[in-house]
Image 1: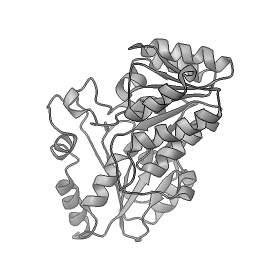
Image 2 (image 1 turned 60 degrees about the vertical axis):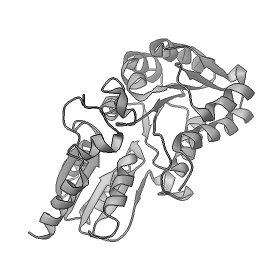
Image 3 (image 1 turned 90 degrees about the vertical axis):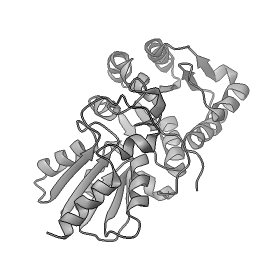
Length: 304
């Protein structure tokens, strides 16, 4: 089991900020144990603006215009939605080196209800032409995301999940933004982040299927995905996200734009807000993402 994704990101950021005093971290009153070392050792590089995401984006804009490399941080549903206008007009229209860090993708904050669920953020942030979108699924991609943000001269949106997960990527894999296990199966499941691990555990032994993770959601690695799609009889996209604008939409766009002849099934959360309360896995298992339903879909394909 690798290190916690959030801790991996912030520990890597701390090391880079310690060496580069132009790195400034702004929080909208969001915390993390791994951030406390940053606040203690680098107080002149840390700002807490309180629960004021829109103001945070504007403060970051001013600092970036003065040559700083700025990170803004809040719960995903707030930072991607509450201050979207400021991200579009201020951050992206000027193509500033501001990294937008959202904590808690999908149903991470399951017990807090739809106010905290991040199931539309991929669709929303994809509409901004200037933004790179990264969704780390393990320690290596989390560290890579932090390094990317520190070196990028343009806006980046990072969806930081919570928890420790098995290793998926090696250092060299990160540059491709995608990782697949190469069993050459006829059926391929394409997912991202937490759901990649759910799929790997669910289909580890008994069903012949390739699992593919997309780490760099935008710009997605079109050439690699085209190659995978043309070598498939059935592609299933699985995402802890609305059916609109996410991974399934990305793959369908590539299939349509490049005239790829393959079958595709999209599996996602419904186009509804979730008001039931329970653990993340309970909400997932009681949705369209139930792994038994997905397994039956694959078996029915092989039995055709």
